[in-house]
Length: 167
Image 1 (cartoon, rainbow, N blue to C red):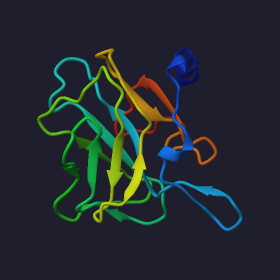
Image 2 (cartoon, one colour; image 1 turned 90 degrees about the vertical axis):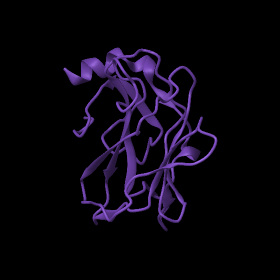
Image 3 (spheres, helix red, strand yellow; image 1 turned 180 degrees about the vertical axis):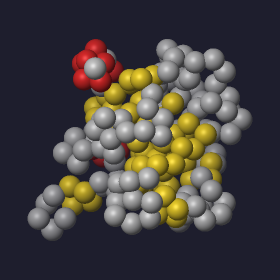
Image 4 (tube, helix red, strand yellow; image 1 turned 135 degrees about the vertical axis):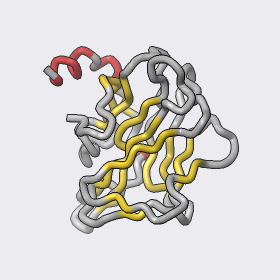
């Protein structure tokens, strides 16, 4: 059933280019994704947007990650970023964290980029340019869950899977 939904929205695929993803290569040339990735984003939920738009982070690494002081941005906001947690908050391996944008409405009709920055301000991950004008329960999702090192730029606009696997 999920495959049929994905096939039905193949027009919603965004190929953003590998440059947008904070990735590294091993000595043998293999591509490695960051340990904490932006996995899913809701920028235009049904109904009221304020306090209903969110970003799901996924720890695809082998160790817990403390996100105290880490920030999330949204490209149309000229200044500042939102702090994920002021106090220690650990995301275990395979764990998820959903960050709800506080009291604002994100721009839906123009494409924007979401960035994840660590406590030192280093860019860890970012989405391609995304927009959503449908005002429904579809979200932009990295497919497969957590991304694919061979095709890290693949995102689909499909039914939301907040705090669950995208696959």
